[in-house]
Image 1 (cartoon, rainbow, N blue to C red):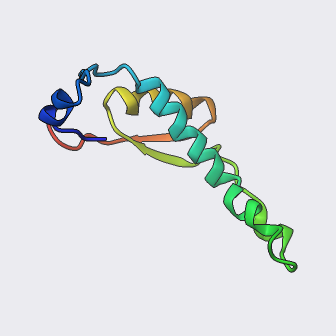
Image 2 (tube, rainbow, N blue to C red; image 1 turned 90 degrees about the horizontal axis):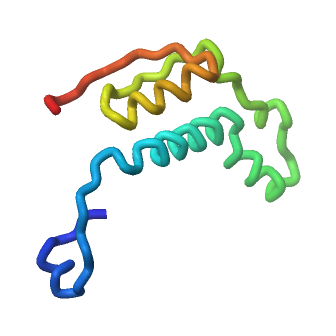
Length: 98
């Protein structure tokens, strides 16, 4: 969420910049989404609404030996650390100059 410093001041809200504070939380949430995709959780959730569906179509896939492109920042490095535990191959990228 982006906010104007002036809008925040009028609302008497405290604005802080705390880089890296949420890196672990964001990385874990990223992996929660990766796992949801690999297990096709959205399709499984919708399956009961359709009388005709195939279990084969709902079968997920393993993450082991898949390749994940990750950044080299705080969050990317934490995502990479989690990915290694799943046996995922990593392909690092560095976009921009930090």
